[in-house]
Amino acid sequence: MTFSSLRLSTALQKALQEKGFKKPTPIQEKVIPLVLEGKDVLAQAQTGSGKSASFVLPLLQLWSQNRDNAKKGKIKVLVLTPTRELTLQVAAVFQEFTKYLDKQPQIVSLIGGQSIGEQLYNIQQGCDILVATSGRFLDVLKKKQMNLSHLNYLVLDEADKMLNLDFTQELDLVLESLPAKRQNLLFSATYPPKMLNLVSKIMKNPLHVTIEQAPTVENINQRVIEVNSENRGPLLRHLLQEYKWNLVLVFMANKRATDNIAEKFRKYGIKAASFNADLEQDVRNNTLQAFKETKINVLFATDIAARGLDIDNIDCIINYDLPRSPADYIHRIGRTARAGKFGEAISFINHEVQEHFKLIEKRSSIKLLRESIPGFELSGEAPKKIKGPAPTKGKGKSKKDKLRAEKEGKE
Ligand code: AMP
Image (cartoon, rainbow, N blue to C red; front, side, top):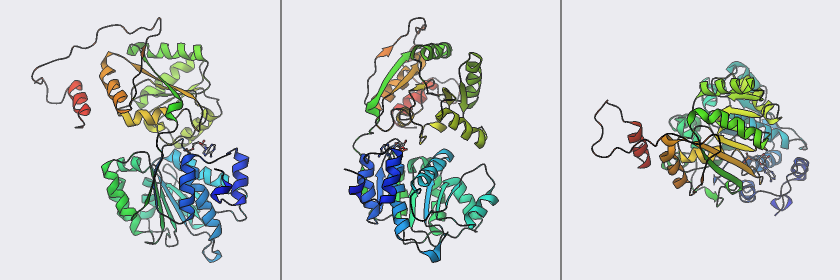
């Protein structure tokens, strides 16, 4: 299969060639023709699968073909995403592929952390394609100064992540502001039951597209190393020295910890930075850019970086702290081995999180050998399993009870 057999215009093919995309990925093969035929599509797709181009390319083609000069600069395409990074990334993909179109669409991105007034002004100056985080889009919508009556295409990207942001409650407000006749595309990595409700509000009888497997996970060498909590930092430095990775993304549970450890690593002469939601948007953008350009080699991040980040060539993902859910595990490790490349993912575990990691393994259908690195061996004893009646001390659930409840799917 080639891009030309997908009937993409020569202008788009030229841009694809320039980017070095030789053939469509499986999701692109399936989604592009359906979008060009004007169908509503519900696609199960992970980041790394090439899903952005699967909607960007056909939408640019449709926009070019159906351009109506009388409605120049009116919003025709709306893409909603859950995070600022994904918004900027999707807007950049649109921008890249417009290069050889005979008319350039105006692309505007709306994200939090910038003045609403300025963003509204940009839209009013002429906007054909609007890419926005769902939160900021709602803020701007409530100002009632945005004309969406010419909209033809609605895309929800990483819709499962939006569910967690209580987006469903405000979805009605969004849908009320859009013309009823429009083409809808929804992309999501997972389909929890709540999603069906959201889907039924947006589209009727969409075509379902699934790609059999998360295409990238099989290219990831997944490892687990047993180590005491306090030895994780020294072990990581040891691994960095041993493997000489260029780009390492380290996931941690808490924002403050990412700042502290990055500072500590810098003192050891390692080019490290932190990435978390407390940092100003400008700092976040600059940090990501520096990481992409390998001016930073080790990025300590919270789960804000687990989804949607499009950085090529990350050599290794470290789970310094384990993710809470098995789904997050897959999202995190999916930041490496993108678009057919190979990568490594290493999880650090100690006695306390053994059970939790077993659960992650079970849900992800993997079973990994516990490794031990000389000089950093796990010491101490596993906490004893308490049998019998539930402990009565204190009102809240113990850590173990929570874990058990989680295991049984009650939390
Ligand atoms: P996405 O899943 O949209 O975030 O894309 C993941 C990565 O794959 C991005 O870096 C894209 O530039 C790259 N990519 C997307 N489509 C192709 C393709 N057909 N050939 C090669 N790389 C691609």
